[in-house]
Image (cartoon, rainbow, N blue to C red; front, side, top):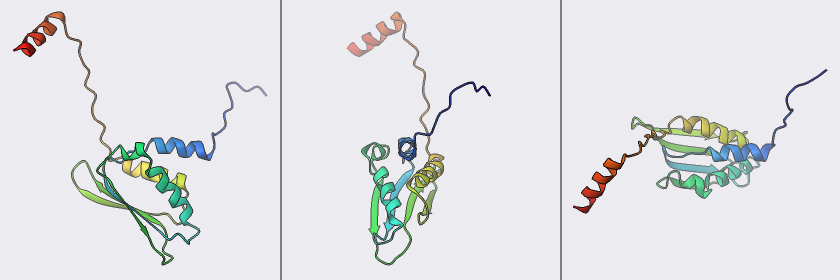
Length: 143
């Protein structure tokens, strides 16, 4: 049997996490609250998720976003709560229970649900100025 093309393999778990962490944009988020019990075996994946959200590149997408970590000792399941502002101005809370989710699944969920509220600025095409228009600009700057 003859196959055309190439056979590619997945880059693995770490490359998938890296791919989704590059897509994180928290512009519509006002506050992120992480809550977990450190003695629970399910908290490891949430701590990895917290690490992905604490990268400076992610924080730079919204410098006004507040991070809060609640460490509890009551055996409650780990969870993340996002306080969102929709483009229409409405407030919304997104709560994700992380008990049986991996870091990759958490990244996929948050990129899917938060990404829909990110408003990308429209690119304006810049028209090059003619020589006469440049001369007019220089004259107005001198005055």
